[in-house]
Image 1 (cartoon, helix red, strand yellow):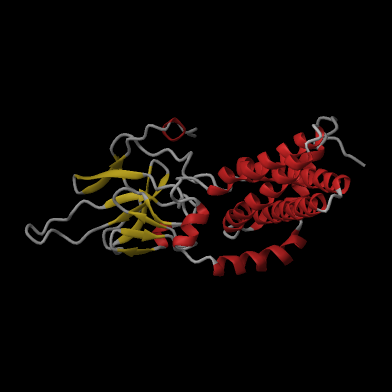
Image 2 (cartoon, helix red, strand yellow; image 1 turned 90 degrees about the vertical axis):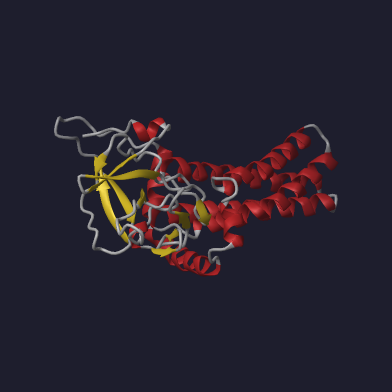
Length: 311
C-alpha cells in the first residue's frame, strides 16, 4: 500500500527507468562479482604507459567515450545494410564492429577498475551487457559467413538491443554518477587574494588548507639559501581530478605530487597530468605572502568554476 505524504497527497510515482537504475545502484549482491574483479583489474593495471593509453591521458579526457562511436557506427550501419538487402555490407560492418569493440572494452574496463559502490555496480552491468552484445555480434558475423543470413540478422538485432541498454547505463554513469568527469569541474576558488586557513608551515613540505571553502594542497620549498627567506609555495586543488582522492595525503616526487588512491601524478607548477589514470589536470593557484600570511587566488576562465552556488 502506498502511503500519502503529510499533506494527504500520494507520492509521485517513480519513473520505471529510474527505478531500474535505483535497484541496480543498491543491489549489494553485485559486489560479490564486482569488488574482486575490480580489485584484480586495479592490481593488474599499474600506473604507466599502458594505463596512460587506456585512460586517455593524451586526449585530455577519458578515451572510452571517444572510442564507443566506432562499434556503434558499424553495427548501426550493419542494421541499415540488412534493411537494404546488402548482405555483404552487413557482414563486413558487423565484423568491423566486433573488432573495434575490443579497444572500447579495454578502455572501459580500465575506467571501471577505479570505481566503487553504486558506480561499480552500474558499471558491472554496463560492462556485462556490452560484452554479451559483442559476443552476439561475433556470432552474427559467423552465421553470416556460413550463409545463415537470417540467423545472423537475428543475432545482430539481439546484440543491438543489449548494446542500447548498455549505452543507456553508460550515459547514467557519465552524466548522473560523474564517472570520468573532472571532479574539480564545479569547484570555485577565490579570484581575489584570500588567506589560506588551517595550514601550518611546520606540517612538512606537503600540507592541506582551504580558501573560500575549497580544499587546497600547499607544497613548500626549502628557504632560499642566499637570503634565508621562505620561497613561495606551490598551491593546487586538493581533490584529485580523477576520482577525488586527497592529494595532500599523497607523496611528493621532485616536482610531481602522486595521488594516494590510484597513483595519478601531477606537476605541482602547472597542474598538468604527468601520469594517469587521471586525464585532466589540477587547478593551480597563485600564491603570495601578505603580512606573514599565505594568500592565494585563481585566474579561471571556466564559468562553472568562477560562479559556483554559494551559501
